[in-house]
Image (tube, rainbow, N blue to C red; front, side):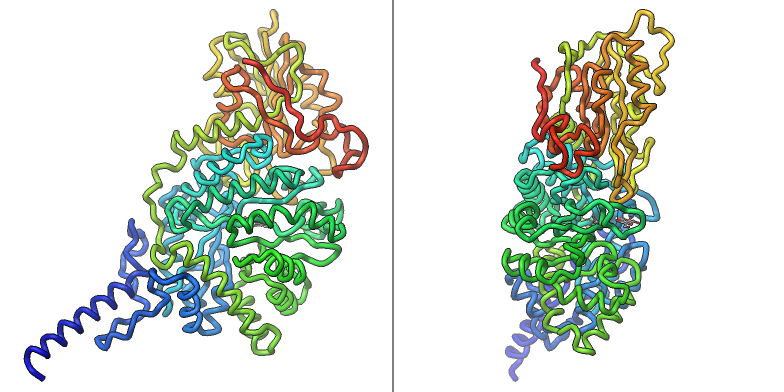
Length: 638
Ligand code: BGC
Ligand code: BGC
């Protein structure tokens, strides 16, 4: 070999080596902001060798996702594949186990903020610590981290909290909902989380359900329209962007259609119960929002805890495999709900076999992941689950991971952290609150109020961020009190009125002679989530009615503001106040309520649910004339 040729070979070798190293490091590329916990260099997936084995196709971002998936799948062991199907809640697993068992997904449940504290930086560090562990596996497949950001990034303290979906249903405004999806995605992804368990596209037929407020409406078409809008806002044009997250329409299917008393979970009545309808009804009422979501690019869908005519949805091969994946062509992955597979039958082995064969691709275990992994291994050994089914599941999961750009940017991109809870984001939430309010009654032109009126405000809920935000805020069940930053209704009234404003939570004012011009009473429901909120009786409490009555003795006119996750029974109390406003669960921006009260913003909201006159009118369709029909809502002139 001539000296020239040798030099040529050396240079060529160096180029190859350099390219190999550069490409191979891509999946574990230096994060935009290096994770605090990941000070050490993460080892590249495959040791670069001077013989320069070609870069695996799955690491090549210029190849189409499908090609990368096939390449990666071909390199995976059975244990690695099962790991991809395993979703664990973060309090049940340490990062080291993510490496040891090739875990594919981690989630925070309701209230699942970091142990270290509840700041955006601490969230990003937590997510990164699991990611670093995943990248330490031989193939360096990133985890996907999920969370319920159902009305803003609601587990994160001081995030922007939007009205719950029931209020957005009242707005009838898909552009608004799309923007909310987008802003929620920005705040969520800025903490390192690329996957959101939202939107709920249930079509509740019984407002006694504790999840009524999580859904947009009892009306199928409205749910489809707003569900799609939220999804598009969340996913944007490019799922890999720092402003996008993967949306997860849930819970497939008919979760809002269960029969009172049919639930077998704890003391739940409707939640996780049985939907008893024929297939034509199921298809007409509950399926269209999923059809619309799939057409709009849904790549993950969560299965419902509930049953259809006695069979748990997690084991419904016909609905999951044939209808959703077959007929509707859903090519994304199906994730179970929290321990949902376990509910199919008490025999765990059977439950797993039934569910995976029925079409569940990823199991939100969420606690005992070793039991799940070992059960899967046994099931494959026994031939009860085929490797082909596993490959199909893993293919779907990996496709979403590639689309999210996780192989290129696995760590939190915290560029947008400064936008979390920003004035700009809160301004959108405030506008959403204004558009969500439904004016139920407005006698003698009580509203809008004059800003210089003398005002009494009563009801503890008037000054409570936790109550006005409802369930799924900082904690799973929500929590009254000063749990996060925001503007209470009382603060908003105080900031807008120019006259005297007095507050007493019990409605006892010293100086009511002469009476106030206006008495505002804020009351409703304490926070709840899921089956905890199933309620046999939606009546106002006696003390609430008494509070309205007492206010009537101390003010010329009374305005009632209801904070609730659904219509409450107000038939008898209606005459006690001139004006009634359904404010739902508005979130942190109480100023939106004052904007409408004082005429800076018109009331335009329309009821997303029929408002019953009595409990006998539930579920929907029972009994006669409701108090207010679906779509009802007064407006104010300004
Ligand atoms: C809920 C889901 C939620 C999951 C994770 C379940 O109990 O039904 O809606 O996504 O928990 O928090
Ligand atoms: C979690 C929730 C979950 C629920 C299910 C709670 O501990 O925080 O996210 O939905 O359990 O029972």
